[in-house]
Amino acid sequence: MASDPNEPPRVPVPDYRPIERFWPYVDLPEQPTDEELARLDPELSEALFGTPKLPFSISLEFPRFDGDDYARAVAMARASAEYREIGAGDRVRHRARFYPKDAVALRDLFHIVGRFDGTDVLLDDKPVPYGRELWLPLFWFLIR
Image (cartoon, rainbow, N blue to C red):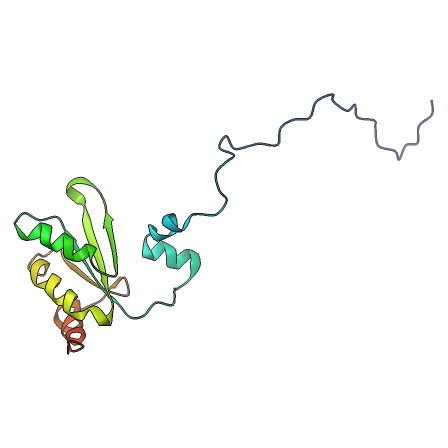
């Protein structure tokens, strides 16, 4: 049988078709859930999705400490607009976000955790110079 030199060679067709599954967990959703997105670090979230349109906020991030005020400080942080725990065990840190309408709650929490050097003041989730000395008192001017 003479064949045309420009015709591709015949390839035998197998009797079975291979599975097109490359990942062993096929039931995983392709998009992250809202809970997973909420747990993202703010810097990573900003890098992935851009800057969210949130109002101005101040966050307090403080470490675990010994004393009677620790449980009260954690309860006050959990009552904030947004709360998250970072780390685990002895390295756990608590981050509480406060908006301008919550200036009193921010002041009350800062009076408990502000005495520790490990407490950070973040403006829109970023550390800024003079956060304790300048930005917190300016924020407290919103208290009526």
